[in-house]
Each structure stands twice: as structure tokens, then as C-alpha cells.
Length: 364
Image (tube, rainbow, N blue to C red; front, side, top):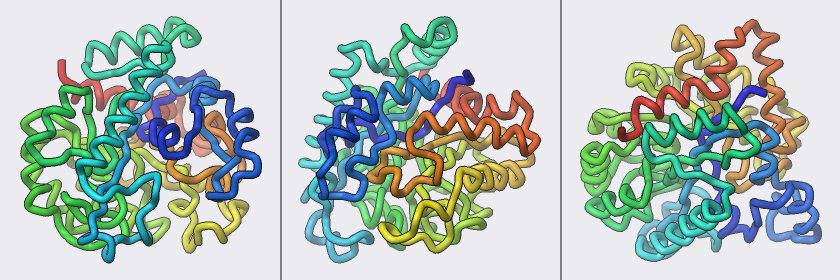
């Protein structure tokens, strides 16, 4: 089985925000949510640690996700009113929520289920151990932050670095204290520019996912450090501000970034309406189309990988048909082979591109 690296999973938010035990077998977890009606994703989860292992997921970027939405930002928030399991009234509370999520990862480490990857040496050691005996090796994770709201001020970034944070983006949906994100318009804020300087000083990787167009351009101009896009698709195929234009993808290619393509169906089918459109209208081949598009722009397969986001606040009601669990990502192997991708190219997309990127960018 080809090992797989997933560029974006929200494991701790699922535990702390959805009260899900991600150590359970997936079917057991979904049975436990039978009868819950607070969200359409209840009983339709796709991702647990056993299911990741079944799918050969050797390593992922695992996030901390907590948004600060003070009164001044509520009327500009792109996705409706604040959500009880995600939005907090200030950065201090968001920081506390993120620290709680980090505590959950630490507990999974204690149980031997996860292994933190903070340095190149730890990455190489983990990859060798997984190759030798996957069944005896914990799943590796690189700590990431989706939206930097829990960083209370730019000069607090070093505290998070010392806690193991290695990758962060500036905004999620709407306006954050640091930049305009998905569904909003605007630049990186003055505080955001200061945070970018701190990121560059520390060696933090900037994730440009979710940035509004102006903020995306400004962030790349201002930041000279390593850049990735953990979970983003192509605007040429599905027109929406959430996706990258061809020009944005070319800028990332120039920076030697890797782009992880995402499995959220609204990012794969034009005109998708959440909680209305049937998943039957789009299949996994749509994800292969986005892989193809990035490869065509790059002239090769060096810059594309997988960032599934399969536990990102939706379930199988909002995944392509045939993708009911994260282990179904294996089906992409045959699809790419049928399109003429060589075994070496499929290896690169499944794990090699992320592996190379992090080997070159994590601290020694």
C-alpha cells in the first residue's frame, strides 16, 4: 500500500468541538451519533485514527482551529453568526480553546497513537519507522493552525513555535485580526504584517489557504519564508473565491510551494449549495481533474498533493460519491494510473511532494 500524507485534518477540533472520540472505529463512532440532529454531518463522519491507518495515512498536518470573532467582526462575518463550537469573542479565549486542542494531541501521543513531527530528524526517523512496520508506528503529525486567531499578538508566535507549531495561515472564513479570509475581501492587516515578520524570523511555514485575493497577494509579497497551500482547489474548474486562480497557482509554483487538493464537494462541483445539492452529482474523478490542472500549470507533478479536509465540519453528505471514509482516498491511485500517471508520479502526489517539502522546510 502506498503511504499517504494528508496536508490538512482537523482531528482535535472534531474531538473538542464535536465531542467525537477519534480513536474509535469509524462505524462505531457514526452509530454513536444516531439520532443527533444538530448538524447534517452527525452519523456521517469520515475520519478516525483507525480509518486513517486503514487508508495508509502515515502523516498529516493536524490543526488547531479556534476563531476570534469580536463584536466588531460579527457584521462582516462571511458565514453567518458565530458558531458555538468554533467562534470565541476574543483572541484570549480562542487561544485557550486551541491550547485545549493541543492537550488532546498530547494525550493521543501519550497513548502511542500520534507522534509529533517538529524537525527534519523526527520526520526522517518517523518515515523510516513507518516503512519498516506501519502497524507498530504511531501516525505522525505536524502541528498546524487554521487561522492564527489563537496567536494573541504577533510577539506571541514564538510561544506557539516552542509548543511545536510549524505551519499557520492568517485567516479562516471572514475577517480575522490578521487578514481577510474566505467570503470576505481585503488585505493583510497591519498586525498581520507584523505576524508575517515573526513567522519569517522563526521559520514558520505560511499556509495561504483561505486568504482573500488581496490578502493572498500581499502576504506573498511581504513574506520571504516557506509557503504551502494545505487544502485548496482550482478556480478555473470551480469558480469561487475560495479556490485559487491560475495566476495564484503560478505564484505558488514560483515559490516551490505544494498545493493539497481538498475533498469538500462544494469545492469540486460548480454551483454546489450546502445542505441542498446531492453528493451524487460529483465523483472522485473531479479531484483528479484538479490534480491534472495543477500539473498542467506546473508542467509536472512536483507541486500537487492531497489535503483532504475530510473532517472539516462536514461528513459524507458533502463528499464526492464513493468517498464515505478517509480510506477511500486509495481509489485515487487507480484513477490517476488510468489517466497515465506513472507509479513515481502517484507516489509523489500521495506522499513524496509533502515529504520533500517538509524535509526542506522543517528546522534541522
